[in-house]
Image (cartoon, rainbow, N blue to C red; front, side, top):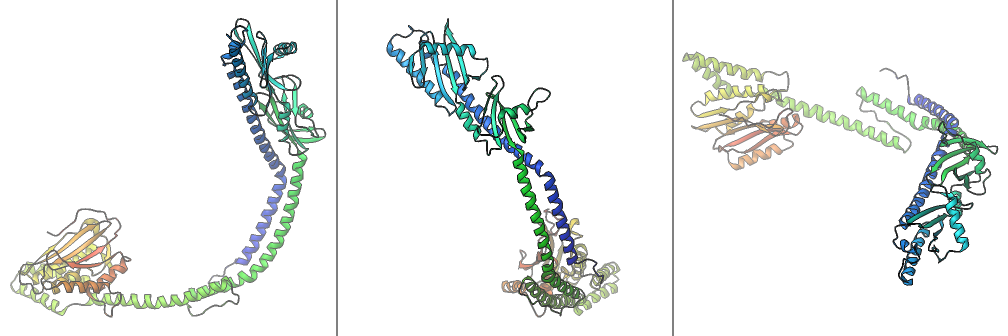
Length: 581
């Protein structure tokens, strides 16, 4: 046997070396790319937080603006714009209360709205969520200031808070002014939620108003960050930047709010570097630990795996050359002990199977098959040659020649010992020759109807001598005592994915008890002498792995019907039956 150049021990050493080298390479790559990965992670986190904050903020402001626009659809506003439009004080009071209720709905929507005020200069009313009254001189000045200082944008700034103003003319020169003020304090509180440390922060910058609102208590102000931001060729701020401000480097995400302007979130890069340094130290300690554990594992596997495995491999080599007697043992109570016991049991079982199956059963079956093939009934031989002699004496040379040809084919098939199986076509032709010989012997007493074999069945492999013994059984036990009108039918019937060969006679000798006894005989697993139908049944089962065998039943002709049933034959499909006659 060729000696192996490698072993499990060598492979383990190589494997540990590869693992350690791979870990070192991975640690090095992690060290080189940790900052890049952390930047990406921080940017993604900042972007996700910023986008969520922007979308929530813009959604709330947009909804408030929609409520402001819907506010103008209140029909009672029209009556309030003219002092004499309403018929009574009660109607005016109802209209004012309705408007105040609508304003209360707007101020109660979310937390961003600080106040909402409706000025109706021509009617002289000022309505808020909490009050209804006549406009004072201060109110008139405020309304005029709103009209003069408001830009043509959705957001304006009054020095303390953002606000939106709508001015509508409902007819003639009559108009009203509706102002919604947003809480700067609430904006700052929301921004502070995005600041996880003193090294991070966020701010909103409105470019048109030049207003910057930022989270409090930061080491670096938003103005310093804003001054370092860069733009592209279209003067748009880059969404992801790394800037230096107040002596430190910051990772910055720049977004855009549809209502308030720029939204900027930033974090100092030093915090990420600190995390990366700690990760590097942890990886180094892990690498040292892995090397120590690998060395210990190599020594441990040498004792507990490699040596027992060598003993098991050596035992398998002995089995390979046919030594099934040498058992192996293991001192430790572990998996190898269980494996060794299983190996020893396998040797015993294998030896037993070889003795019983391959030596006794297979050789016995072959011997029985050879004996069956070699059995030539002396009476049958004498009758056959006597018939041939009589035809020659009568100078019936043509029929004598046919009869001799059938005899030759019959004995040639019996003496062919090259293989234990044959094609169904050859088996059928052998049975046809036997039937022709017996037909001459029983001439005038019976009729033989032999069906045709379909072409797609001809090359199907079957055990030798499975059909002719069925015909012999019919002649001996069914038709032997028949004086006239005897009938023997051989049919080939297709079945789903298989086929059925039926041999039927109209003999009168077999009783139901005889058929029942023959059926029981087929089902016996062991028998001192295997001959005839039981021999065929067992060989069919072995050959087709349990998917074939014999069945015996009462024939529709009155005698016995012995059927060969093969459940699965590759390449056969359901087709019309081919019956005799």
